[in-house]
Image (cartoon, rainbow, N blue to C red; front, side):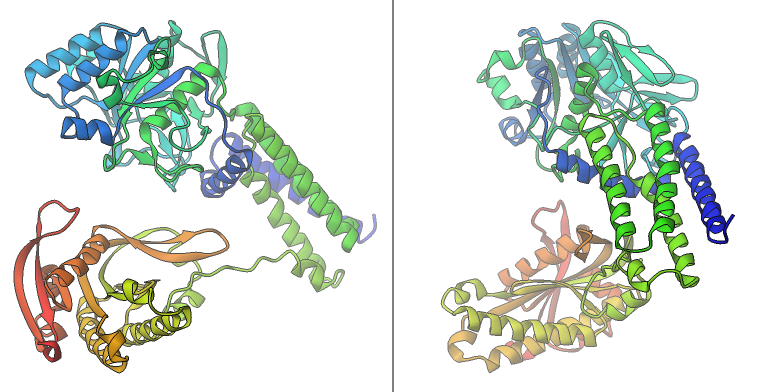
Length: 619
């Protein structure tokens, strides 16, 4: 054997063993650390596939904004739910499913009315599984080994569970919060319970499912499931793709009875603020009732995407073969022909993968990539080290790391490339500054003058914030969001934020005074400041990302600008912020500070103690 052939043979064997090891772990369900990559690739394939027509056997009756407005409160009373169920039941649906947790007692008469309504037909109500530590069972938290084991179940009131079937309504999400699977079975100790979608589908089919090792039989169809009897989800489209009608129209009788008759009817909440929403490839806020209805439709129509032991075995085969082919091609030709051959193999694999996905077979994308890329890179690097290939050949395969940009953070990001790759909770001070009167002024200014005006404002904000140790996370036209607490929180974040409030006020007043009188007279500014816990993360696509901060602290700081404007103050700052900053902060040392005053914050229950600050020059 030649000196060139022996290293190649060793490389081929090692590449095959690497792929076999990954394939075996994937077949056993132990490659949970690849779920994030697989989720991204699955979303991409779903979008490429496009929307699909759902089976015409489902109708969602949505407790939407119109229904809540008609009722005057949320949740709807049990008496209203009883009327809703009675109206639907009279039209002869296959099953009525309430995607609502009826765990708390209501008025006795109302509860009795709802129990009577549920007993009048084929109905299913929801229970919920509670997991150890209050943590939702999710795909990606660890290896998937068997049926998910709950700590306990939140069961409906006995008056309801005695007259209706009960199913567990939990879904399995990945780390992005996207529902990927619906567990069909749950256990808590020795107790085994069926999921909500499985209960509904069994009731509609009129028979109990037969459970096998890797599939279940229902209505004469074999439904293949993944490890632990979980059903993969593939969404039909954005919200409303599954036929949806408002509960308000049902209660008023203003709907087509054909949307109910001989259909599975799922009642669930879609009203704004109910919180039961999930991100999906088609919709960032798909209502939970539509997620559950998708699972029911899969069980009834048999159109779920298939990912079972047989598919996982095919994935393992790709994990073995693909790296060996790529290493073999690198050994065959280290030139344009070899590169073209590699591209052709990758393209063929992609077409096979995408075609399978379009035909409801979920072949892994992350596993073959993980199996193929390291051996190919290592073998190529070895060849480069031996001087048997040109550096340009490998340079074309390298990828540039796209970095998040935020003023004041470039040096930190250069040293910590994985910063905020996962969301973090941190205590921080948040400032918002906004120009008042700018919108009306911009309508009279030309585009060049408007740009120069904003450039001057943005420049002074950036300089002042940087000098105080903060970062501008976002310029929003004539305003800015400022954060003290990243890249690392410090004990003096609130103190520095208070100093920034005074500095911004002074510099903005100086800047306004430097403008022509006709312009300055039409402009003002307001600042809101608050301190508390935020969730910071990277958002955006692979090509472009930005730092985002979310949470109640951010919302309150934004609302405080409105209060500052209403009270003709330059700065509205929360008592929490001042307490964290201390009595020695700049807001106490200059200007006039009035407060604290208990103030109602728009969109927030309860009140908040705030202070109003005005610089001495504007008094």
